[in-house]
Every structure is written in C-alpha cells, then in structure tokens.
Amino acid sequence: MTDPERGATAGAGPDGIPDAGAGPHRPVAPVPPESGILGRAIGRVGMVFAVGFVVSMAILIMEIVLRYGFNAPTLWAHETTIFICAINFAFGGLYCAAKNRHIRVVLIYDAVGPRTRRALDVAISLVSAVASGFFAYAGWLMVERATMRPDGSFRLEGTGSAWNPPTPALTKVFLFVVLILLCVQFLILAVNYARRRV
Amino acid sequence: MFDLSALGIEGGTIVMFAMLLGFLLTGMPLAFVTLLVALIFALGWFGPMAVPLITSRVYSFVTSFVFVSVPMFVMMAAVLDRSGIARDLFDAMRLVGGRLRGGVAIQTLIVAVILAAMSGIIGGEVVLLGLLALPQMLRLGYDRSLAIGVVCAGGALGTMVPPSIVLIIFGLTANVSIADLFTAAFIPGLLLALLYVAYVLIRSHLEPHKAPIPEPDPTPLAEKLRLLKGLVLPLMVVVFVLGSIYGGIASVTEASAVGVAGVILSTILRGEFSLTLIKGAALQTLETCGMIVWIGIGASALVGVFNLMGGIKFVSGLFLGISASPIAILILMMVILFVLGMFLDWVGITLLTMPIFVPIITELGFDPIWFGVLFCMNMQMSFLSPPFGPAAFYLKSVAPPDISLGDIFKSLLPFIGLQAVMVVLLIVFPWLTGRSGQLVP
View (cartoon, rainbow over the protein chains, first blue to last red):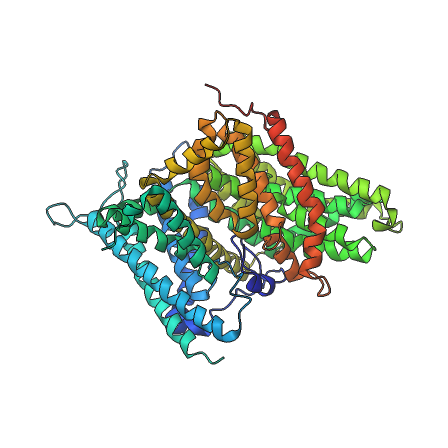
C-alpha cells in the first residue's frame, strides 16, 4: 500500500522509491509549507544524519579489512554502527513526518472532497500528535531507567560489552527527544492544515 | 480509567482489530495507528506498568545489528538509480536477446535478475526498467501489456532473489538465520524468473505479432566487446555481495556494506561519482528507512502488547482449531496474506502477522525457513496486485502518459498468476528450497 497520489507523482513507498526519472541530479522531494519552520529545520538537519549512513558503511568496510587484512578486529565497529543507525532510524521518522511521507492507506482519503480532506488532515495530525505525545511519556519512563540508578543518582546505561559505551542511554534519550519533536511537528501540521483555504 | 481487560481476549482482539481498521481507513499513517492502538491497550488492559515493556521492545527493534543491513541495501539501490550502471547493463544484455522472438523482453528479465541480485530493493528497479526497457519494447512494436508486465514483474524480482530486504525483515521477525533464508530463496527466485521467460517465449511464439523481431542490426565485434564492459561492474558487485554471504566471509550486514562500497566504487570508476549523487542517495535512504523503521516500531509495540494480552495464543488456537490438516491451515494463511497484501505494505504485514504465524507454523511441524520463502513469494504478489500494488505505481511514474494504472494492473494479471503457480509449486515440492519443508526434530 503506497500512497497512490504521491506514488504516482513524486514516488512513495517503503522501498526507496525514486521520484520520477533517474539520474545523479534527481531532486529529493521538498518539505511541504504546512510543516512550518520546525519542518524546514528538520529537512535541513536531515543531511547531517543521512551522512551517518555513509559513515556506517565506511566503518563496516574498515572492520572487514582490519579483520581479514590485519587480523585485528575492533571492539567498537559494530556497536558504533548500531548506534549511528538507531539514531538515524529515530530521526528518519521525524523527517518523514515533516515531509509528510509516512505510509498510509488512502482508500477513503483520496475519494473525499477538499473540505473533508482538510478535516481529515487536521484530525489525523492531532491524533498522531496524541500518539507521539503518549509514546514520549513511555519514552520518558525508559529514559529514567537508563539514566538513573534506583537510588536516583546519575549514570548512563551501557551495552555491557567489553567496550561498554553509554550508547543505549544516549539512544533512548535521543528517541525521547525525537518523540517530543514529533508531537510538536504534528501540532504545527494540524494548525496549518486548519488554516489552509479550500 | 476504563478497563479494557474486562472485554476478554475475544472481545479485546475484535476491538483492537476494529480500531486498527478504523484509524487506518481515515488515512492516518500506519506507523502512528499501530503505536496509538498499542499504547491504548497497554494502558487500558494492564495499566502504566506495561508501558516500559513496549518501549524496551521498540528499543531492541531499532538496535539490532542485522537491521543495519536495511539502510545499506536501500542506499545501494539509491546510488544505483542515480548512476548509468543499469543502462549499460541493459545495453550489454542486448547481445543476449539478439534476433530471438521476444528477445528484448528476455533481455529485460535477465537485467532484472542481475539488478535483483545486486540489491533487493524493488522500487528503484521497476523505475529503471520502466525508463530503459519499456520505451524500447514499445518502439519495436511489442504488445503493450506484455511489455508492461515484463517490466513490473521483472522489477519486483528483487523481493525473491537474494539479497532481499523482505527476507531480512522476515528473518528478524521470525528469528531465523538470514543466510539460510537467502540460500533457500535462491532457486525459487531463479525459477520464478525462468517461469517468466518461458511465458514470454510461449506468448510470443503463439502470437508472433505481439513480439516482433527487430530489424537485423549488424553490430561490429569491437562494439560488442565494448558493450560487454557494462556487465563487468554489476557482476563484480553481485559476486562480492552474495559471495561474502554464501561464503561465510562476512555477515549479511557487512556484505550489505560491501555492496554499497562496490556500487560507489563503480560510480567512481565510471566517472559518475559526485557529492550531489552521494548526498541525494543518503537523503533518500534516510527517508525510506524512516518509513520502514517507524512502521516496524509501531508494529513491534502492538504485537508486544497483543502477545502480553494472550492474543497470540488465542489466535493460534483459532487457527489450529479450524482444521486438522496442516496444509489447509497453511493455505488459509496464504490467502490471508494475499488479501492483506492487496491493501497493506509488506513491512507492516511482515511485522504484524509473522510473530503470530511463525509459531503456528513451527507448531504444525513446518520448517520456518521454507515458510519464509513461501511468504516472500506471496509478498511478491502483493507488489503487483491491485488496487495498491506498489510496482504499478512506480511504473506509472515513468511510463508514457497514455498508459493508465488500469492498463498496468491488467497487464500484471498473468504474472500474478505465475507467482501463484510458484507458491503452489513451493507447497507441493518443498525441496525446491533445498529443504524438506518439515521441521527436523
């Protein structure tokens, strides 16, 4: 199930769907105006995270070379790539929300008139804000346990490996921040959809 | 606070299903529908104590090492789309088609298999073939629906031919070895491609006007050799990626990174590499992974809560009670998956249904790896089946404007039929996957 409207014009779907046409300069779809300043900021920061995937790839290759070429596997390569990717996955959800690229069923959505569609847009954004706000609360419970000992003193949860980086705690804090931003982004979308003329 | 557990598991399951359906039909993003329903049930059924369980499931979902291979394969496809590698590959394969009736269609299918063996992401492939092969077949006077069908069905082969992202996510959900899944899917994937080739040959033999033979086009030997160069880089990438997985040299995740490096290296060798290219590919990866992972986050939360409610046990009880014949239950599952595939995307289907289906399958004594291949073949159909088959939409975005979505779906029917034949073959002859189909005790 892709979003047929966007699928046919700009390309959408879970599979790395290219926009119409191929080639090195194919543009990446822009952030819609409804997403506001926050959405534009998210769109811009996206590049920082996107580069993380290239870095992960380089680390993995380096690990293979070190293991077979120099018989010197590292302790940190796998945990670092997992951390980078986890952060990117979390941010990716926010990025898709700002760009309105999350996958949905548009069976009814596409069939209704512009007024009903605006009402749906507002309602969907509000409910999504509730869902992410709700989940942010759940995320907070997780952050609490990852950053505090039972007696309330501060510590960062580690992976428990020989290297033991504090990445689990950092990932959880980041996910929590993303969820708050998601909630805000959906509220902004709801307001701007409501103000849209039809 | 309302107490949902008073509904009992039957009522709870029905309410949950109705809520999912209701929210989904409004057009709300799937990821947030599942998250919301999961949280409502966690709180309403168990109270705040159950909430950390959801978040810890979500956390372990996004931090698994195998999952890192998903962005790698997506990025590989994104770089591939932006380079001329596929175009040169297509030109090189012209030498195969030659003056055979239906030659260009077969050439397209071979290119599709090689592209599928490189990365296993379908969207990009359908678009690439739609840009390369479709215009050429139409220009030569091929029957439109034959040409469209070959492009869409060929492009969707990425699901079956390893490395396949569908198999990776199945492996993660079902907790089975992804390398084993890749081994088992190899022959069925190729067989499906061969089935397509046979179909093209038979159709063009029976109705010669549907696949005219191109005018003889004397290509000098030097030109032929030059064209063949287009084969070298893609085959190198295939050998590196599949070789390191099957050879046990690198994990699936590492092999996927090798694939990305291989494709990037190819663009450098071809003089196509640029910062714009890599930035565009990386951004597209971020977006695609955002979609896939968040559907996963929501589904994994929902399945976690449903399991805690005793829902999975309840549903498997229902399934096992339907019939004493394991095959009947298996076929029912296939039908359910096919129907779901018409409306939902494969990521959602895999993550929502497999935690329920796979335990039933093992309980029935079937081999989960074989079931994975069967499932993947079924999801192949979901790419093509109306009204939401993604492959049709990808093709629509690049096809000539006079080809409508209806035309595309109509052209796909015979190919969906061939996929169904393949599903049946896999059920009747499980050894096609190199496995017995039964669980070895």
